[in-house]
Length: 347
Image (cartoon, rainbow, N blue to C red; front, side, top):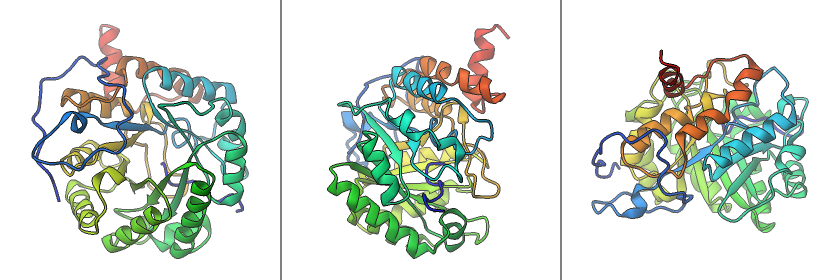
């Protein structure tokens, strides 16, 4: 998931009015959709735009045991961009001994120089990872921390406070280097060792990362246990703390089949950015029980059917992951991709 890479050295708004289902290939406006206003009773043009942050090349591949060539990863990322993705998680600059699939981060990230209108992001765990990313030409950075003690130890070998301090310090250094920064928080709804998570900790951690210079905080359901009631409660607490919906993105896993319901609840609360992974690639390698990310195809089918604009062509995006799925010997985890593929084949 988008926030589970190991260290380098070791209040609801108005409901949307549903429209009829759109053609699956509908991409809508190609704008990035960052910085959207919170939901109000008067829904304007920008409120219909949703940014999909595609995490397939990094979060989707990090835990795969089968080594993939850098060229395959580069082609995968390029195909996603060609489908209309404008916010893409490309690589992670972590220690290759712990996350071997990211050992070629320089080669992969270095193949995608910064371009206007695109966010080409790489995750970094600390200053060393940040220096590597900046040297490779990366100009959008992700930092990450845990909101539970157990996952902080499992993922980073330190304490909850330690992960937050490190993430905040690294974010500040990235901002000083004129990089954009996104802050990821793990285990915001449940922890496999500790169970339910204190929402107050999520709020305080979010404030800390935003104050450190993150333009956005990503509230992550690392093991996919969140339900709509929890999502509504967490977002309400964040709003009461003064955090606007345009400073929040959501990252859901679909372990319990609740990811799309959680997206819908988040939309009602004004959130307009969501992480997703092409073909449902990915899981957290350091969290027992974690399964794949919300599939981008499933998210797009729902969003386009509700009349939201993403700028992404679903049909093109479906094909972007074919070579990766084949190399990994896996069947797509996306229900939408499987259904449309059967339909196209006449089955």
